Image (cartoon, helix red, strand yellow):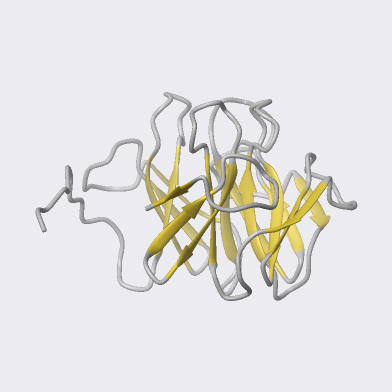
Length: 189
């Protein structure tokens, strides 16, 4: 099988959680890592020192990345035991949004579910998707079944329409849906 890699970059350490986001609002997603509460973010996809280096979160938190207010760049969030802590800048400090949504065992996800430029929460629980359209506590706006309990949930704008939709990865195969509804995969990779 041919190697289809366009770019290989060494950044981070073993055990870091890889991240991707548009940290400076230039329209390009670039690399970053989360290391036990420390965020190290690059403004280009090359090796080197972090352009942003700050502490936000604790060991064991799940790092999240999103544009929480439609400001044009991504910033950090953490998920801890069903509570979301979102920050509007790539710096150390207190969260700008705190709310409960989900249970400690849920898988948190982030996406722009409506195409309005704002990323909001979702949770994946045993094959069930629960999306929320605002960064506040409350009931889900949309619920549906897609996937099996032990699939890996993923999200993306698979059609380029500005709306993030669901996908799952199972045994190396990707199953993508073009709408956030129950049904069979629109695309399998």
